[in-house]
Image (cartoon, rainbow, N blue to C red; front, side, top):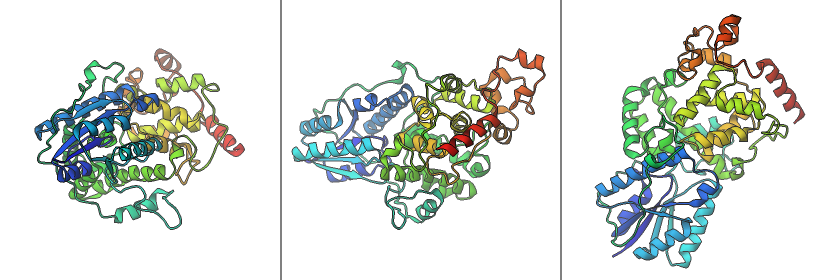
Length: 457
């Protein structure tokens, strides 16, 4: 009787799961294992919103496995020792897992490989599970990664994608392998009240529903803040409760400009993964252009607090920050505006904003969060690093009727669309009656400071 362990990480699904598929094919019995790693919490990455979504994912994965005749085994502790114990208890000779790209994931994999080797157990690691195209599979001449998105997208688009794998027909788990009780979001505090449900079942239902109803118009509507026509699949891609390969196949299967525009956005995710895989230090350090004159928490405490609380006096920025706190999620266009305002209008270090997003975003991950912040801040892969997004003009363009602002900034609910993005234009008595702050900074002053600071760096 042969036994294998499948270590789940950021791939919490049964459909299109190459390590699980391979393990079921190779062994008579399989131990589906998830280890709650204290190192994630010590690094400040385990926050209430992601803990709650993770609990949903684990419960759904366990239910799916039970429907196949198996179950999920949960352990807590450092990953390498826990996996070794499970392998010893079950008599496993092989462990299967998905490759990660962060420095932490690489270190975890190496520690696990070394520990298992000493135990006589083989570790098999699979690329192209977290991403559609594995980092390093597409590279330019003379470099280990693409630094600019458009040429990467051209080459990425030519890569043939594997066909999505079905869920296994059955998973037989050996007797006697103990597991802990699964966590539940109902027992967690600090969770955003509007946080969406996690798990593969919810993710697949959302994908199917969105492809039917919204994909065709994605190209024209994805920046519509009030319309909220984005897929909202990012949390499921982050936790791996959906496969990016399957998502792309489903979109391409429907065809049309909407599908093409959506697949391009999924490619951005792969692009950032290949950047971080080649340059792990960009999780903390400037990727391209270093700047040393950023304002810090000490320099700009009041401005940073106002930004976090959604009290900057710029309605579309404030709406974005309040949506983040309520839902643990934010519209992509709103993310760009909030990040641009902090880094370029207030000239605050992008790492401060990135940390706040990681504290609340259910889809917050080191790869996309940090590199998107660097893109906006002008230190990353943007070929126009001095680009500044004006929140007034952007608000009028992408929230012309003020629906997004009215939804998240109730103080401005009665302000008409032609003024809602510039409430300081209201008559003084009307303005005084609003419980809404004056602008934190004049945009022209912020732009002048930004240009001056960049000239010094």
